[in-house]
Length: 415
Image 1 (tube, one colour):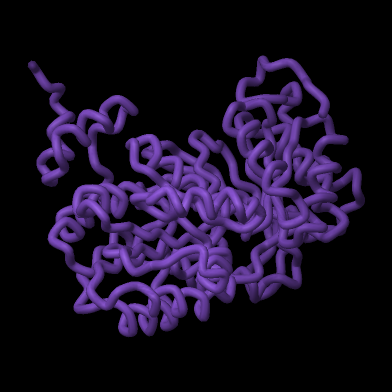
Image 2 (cartoon, rainbow, N blue to C red):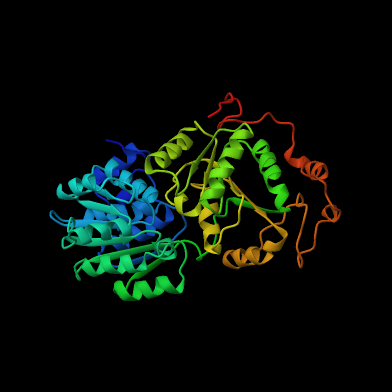
């Protein structure tokens, strides 16, 4: 049998031939940088801290060595911040024919109890729901030999530190722990010192950096101009677009507004049921809807290829969230675009984000306002009426027909 040139890549990392062939069936033949560096270390059984952005292939970076190392009767545990991310991880394990129990909030407890009783090889869980099962006595962690904390920084931001500590205290002392995070704040360092033993550290990018292929743009406008600008951005840019809102109320209102503009749009936020969020994500993946409006928490776990543009309609509350948001585009070697809409009085918020990035975000010449101390563009110095602002955005009014799907030729659909 003749192997393709890229097929042995995972084999060179000491992944079993059967597993390599499984990956090849899904078109996965070459490891990503985080996989290439983390897998050999994890296969040795060492504790590991991995610093890498969303979309770099972290799931297989910890998933493959976990599957390879687990002995009969042993269990792997993966903790993730949100149900969406947990579902994505569980789906990956199941594609590799690994018996997996998914334990997340918003889903019936009795189904999860049934899965837990069926001796899963891997448990993928959100911390809060897993603690619920621990308290009920419906799960025991005495057989866990490998534990993974995925997007650990986000879990701590969401207040899961007590739950994580309670869970890890129930896991046997003799275990392997892998921690993955996009950033490395002090809290992550403290958690690592408390629960990891002499961990190896793998860092694909400097903490807080963004994908090189994401073209970033910052547009300063007045509050009353934000919706008009969004309409023009949606008209101007083709392809699928992810729009971030700061609150669930704002996301719900914004999705309705976008649909009134004539675009197909879905929404995922805390007011949507698990079934509704799954359906919106499925439609976005399939191209049935072109725009997805999300809050930061609900967006964790969005694993959709070919997102053309990320629009920050609202700046995030936490600067680190900016990195997570724009990491949804510019994935797997493809170019991406991230546009942030800021108000004149949000200069400090922008500075905080730029501190995380280690560089300034280019201010668009289409800004109608610009706060001090950054100088305003000459064309933005005069007051703008609504009509004047519209003309000022002429770059975004290229006369294109309003695209409704991932292809401009897709017919308009209302929903």
